[in-house]
Every structure is written in C-alpha cells, then in structure tokens.
Amino acid sequence: MDCHAASMRDWRKTNPLKGAAREKAICRSYTRVYIRRGKLIPKPCEVCRGSPVQPHHDDYKKPLSVRWFCRPCHLRHHGKSPGKFIPKFLADRMKSNRGSKWGKRSGSWPSSRERFLVA
Image (cartoon, rainbow, N blue to C red; front, side, top):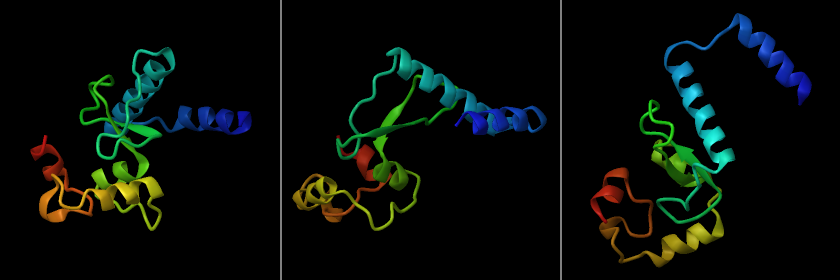
C-alpha cells in the first residue's frame, strides 16, 4: 500500500488534476475527513434503507450536502445497472413494495422522478 501511495504522489506532481476532476476530488476528500471526524454521519440508503452506504454529491461545491445511497441504488441513480447482483434483502423489499406508493412500476426500481414526487 505504501509503495502505491508513494508512486501516486510522484505521478500526481507531474499530472495534476484539472477543472471538474480537481473540484470533485477536493469535495470527496473533505467529505471523507468530515466522516472520520464525526461531523458527517452516514444515514441509511435514501431508496431502500439498506447499508453500507456511499455519499453522493449533487453539488461538488458543498461537501457537507450529501445524499446517502447503497451501492446498487447509487448505480441506479447514475443510470447504470448494478449487474445481476441484487442483495436478498433488497430483492425482498422490491417484492414487498408491489402495489405500494411506487404505483405502476411496483416491484421494480423507481425512477429518479418518481422517488422525488412521492413523499
């Protein structure tokens, strides 16, 4: 681990991040520090209430403004498929939501728009 970290430090000196990549890296770094210091406490996933969770930033200029998603829900939020792996607790939750507040799409993942329209 130390060798990789040292090589990354050396590489970063000659290849600094620029623009949006730098802004994202700084925001993520601040978020990790806030979590370590206990100023930012992870909450259950916004969609399925599962854990472990990952922080998601809607605005990289606000490192404390974080939404929490588990890995599959985070991938779905970004429009990517989590693959064939869906944890059993999440599959059970999806089945139990049939006919629930998600309406026509019950039993499937709610779209971003549907998640925010239903409170």
